[in-house]
Image (cartoon, rainbow, N blue to C red; front, side):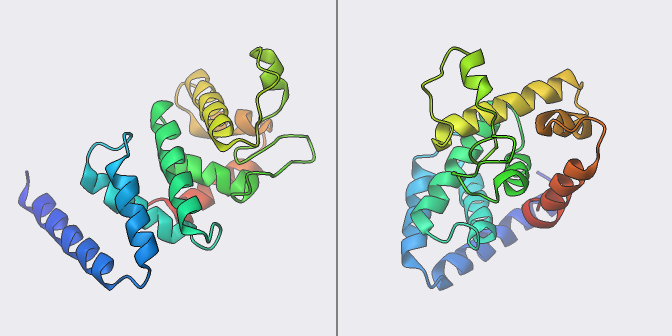
Length: 186
């Protein structure tokens, strides 16, 4: 390990430890500990601690309840990694699509956090599934986004346009990239 990486890691550990000890929210600290210990989409415990704490602080205004926020972040991380997407990208898409409202419905009829169109349920032979169920919505949304990313040979701009049904317009992609750059990326 390079000395600069080692020093960064040590400083992050001290910063996280200081933050955790000085945190005025023991409920959040306990939820994070539980989330980290049962998380299976992170490469290690340290990654889970850092990511969940960081994203939890960023998401707090939109999802104020601690337990709900940590659960949502774990599910987003898991489904994003499952689909081989960056979790921060999925957070940015959700931010733009639904503003983290799991019951959002667009004027076109798209539903849930990732604004999945209901016709997909019929297309895959699962018309009884509920797109307001967070797990279902994230699984389908991440799968669809990854499909378009592969179809566009890694061109994220075109993949996002396809995801939004706005191929040829940069309005949506600018919103997602702004959310990614200014809210969700480190």
